[in-house]
Length: 265
Image 1 (cartoon, rainbow, N blue to C red):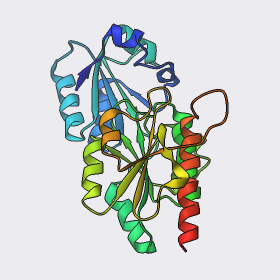
Image 2: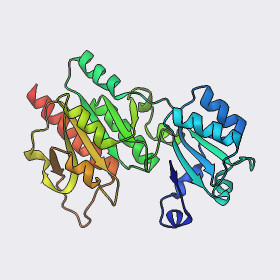
Image 3: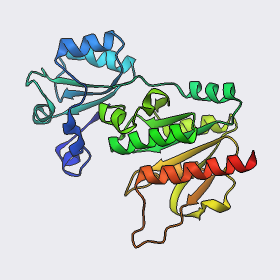
Image 4: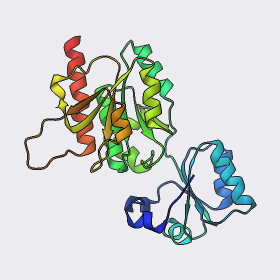
């Protein structure tokens, strides 16, 4: 559970994209019923300082589902609200249900293939996430893993940007990306992340059970996640700028894996 301050907002933590107001559920009864009905909720916004009975019930249900809870100002809720009747609570409902990482591994096993996963570290742009899901599907990846915090969820914009791939490529949301990587390593997977200072990707052996880690634009892969990667891959660039769009970087690295798998036969 975390508190979002005005300082956080000014620093850009609450992005303009939050104004898209996709899949919002407003009002105490509506939000509570959504939780009790088992609807997938990406994030719950609660008026800071509001702790009456109905709100406590909503927070309790949110904790049961391990939903991200943020306490915000009345002004912030009013900015997001579409009805003006939020009653101190707004929930962001996912447009699609999330899968489990275990489902992805099972799919790979059923196909007789080495697991191929794409992990995203703090991708906040829904268009980037949608494009990466589309690439994952076309490259034969068995799934996409995203973190719960500081990352966009499965919104309608993401679904549209995926060009339908979201219906075929599972997406899992995890509490801790680093811990998930550690657990997958115990099952034989290894990880490569994209970074401009890494070894040229063509020189790396990217075959076998693999997870590709892509960081956000600007910040790149976070320190702890990078430290848990087995290899750091650099994508050759000859232009005047020093970075690729996150979804493009994911596509380039994913298709190098495809190329190496094809050569291996």
